[in-house]
Amino acid sequence: MDDIQKFLNSLSPYIRRAWDARMPVDWEIPLRFIYDYEICFIKAGTVNVWAEDTLYEGRAGDVFFFVPGQLHSIRSVGSERVWQPHIHFDFFFDEYSEGLEVPIKMPHPNEHMRRNVFNDYPSLKIPTKTTFSNPYEADELISRIIAECAGLDPLKAIRCKSLLFDLLYLLLSRRFAPSGGAGEKDKMMELVNKANRFIQQNCDKPLSMREVSDYVGYSPNYFAQVYKKIVGLSPVDYHAQLRIEKAKNYILMTNLSMSDIAEELGFDSLYSFSRYFKRAEGVSPLEFRTATNNKYK
Image 1 (tube, rainbow, N blue to C red):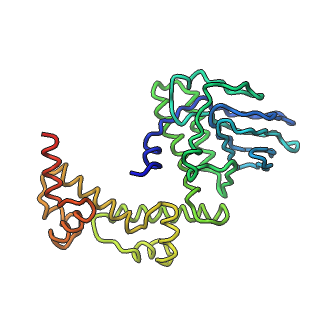
Image 2: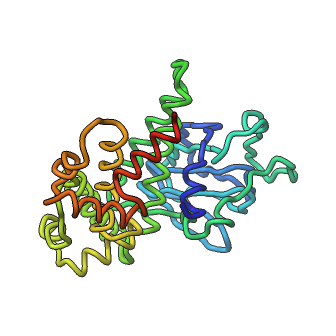
């Protein structure tokens, strides 16, 4: 497992504040920094956002993402009131998370400044501004997070974390989308998700790149490049990964013979299944079952 995967697996985000804010005309947040992370969704109105020596214009459907210590200011533009639901959160909960201040003006230096994780993992860095061609999903997730945080459900922390993970995935996944306009990126993500569903439904039999690309309606070479840029591996490798995981489940969770497992997964013989499994795991299916059983005796 590489460092990025270890980092993603270790995440336990904590939502500090979630507000559905409708601001007056001529609203402004002067130059400041914050101690934590903020996701700000422009639901109505227009804003000018200055951050990282860049001036951004934000309109309905845009998402702004601010990191700890990042100098920024926000100012409404025009006569329409700005509607800007926003969320302050940590990537990791600690003893200072609950009491950390969310400053409106320029704060004093604070020893509890959150660590900017994107300094360690720049390939994951979420842009300051993200524009969605169809902002419905981001809008829905943010609205649900705000509603859940305001509720009285004793299990709301779990639900809020789950929804925030969905929102972070929506923002992070665009980092791995192919170059092009926002509409093109959204289209490619839809194709990848469509391909993944097809691969998942067919992990109990052989599957070629041609079959996957025909299903989504693109040439094999082009779609393989797009898919690998977004997912990090080829469709065939993803299929193989799912097939091996399914094999492991059969081996460890059932009493099926190796021949029966090979048949369940669509292999034409026990020999071909054993070769396939050993190439991926370094041991035969039988050796894997024996070693695991001995480990937990």
